[in-house]
Image 1: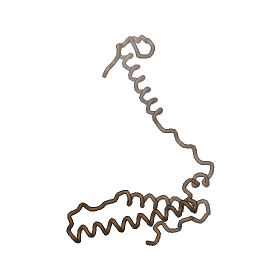
Image 2: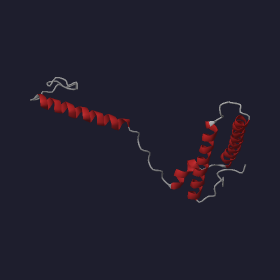
Image 3: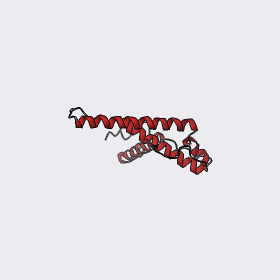
Length: 139
């Protein structure tokens, strides 16, 4: 541990009666500085919304957003079918190619499901009808 001279402190010059007192004061100063630095780095807490409707508003979907999500879901379902068919052909015909994984399609489909579920919950809390009734559209 790097301890400065017992007669000097980095801020203003202070004199202590003993070396132990100087070390104790230095340690207290360091721990206070660490605590204050940690507090400074913490993110500020968001204020609570005025009403439940205000909190649910960002999660609600309008008709255009719902239509875009449904189209995107249908396209992702087609991509999943193509991925399955490619992997099936690879196995059946023993092509020896690496499997097609397409992580992004699966992750995006899951995220869309989460968005729809959040919009349905927000609509029910507001007492309105959800724009999209089902999470997964018919294939």
